[in-house]
Amino acid sequence: MRFGLVAAQVEWVNPALVVHDEQGKPFSVRYEAVNAMLLNEFLEEHRKVQQLEANDAEQQREIKALVATVKEQAAQI
Image 1 (tube, one colour):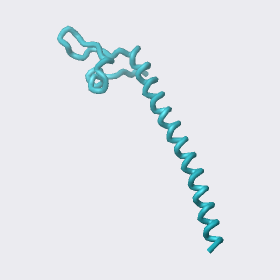
Image 2 (tube, helix red, strand yellow; image 1 turned 90 degrees about the horizontal axis):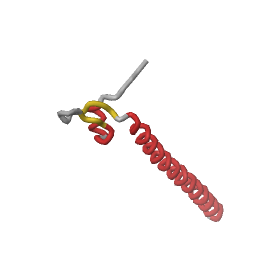
Image 3 (tube, one colour; image 1 turned 30 degrees about the vertical axis):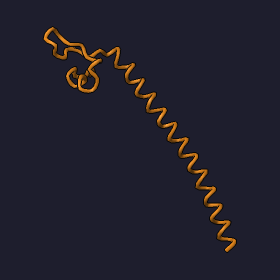
Image 4 (cartoon, helix red, strand yellow; image 1 turned 60 degrees about the vertical axis):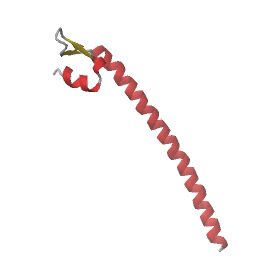
């Protein structure tokens, strides 16, 4: 099974990925450039996920510390 991208639709997303014909109409997709673009997008999203995971870990530590403080204060009351 084969698949392809529609050049006119790709042009809406990233005009640099499209080759135009003599009339300036979208003609073909520069598939060799698509892989590089997708890799860059993947790496950017991966960095975001790593940052979110780090933030989550820090928030979990802070929550545990706050819970411990509340329990300690409740025991003193």
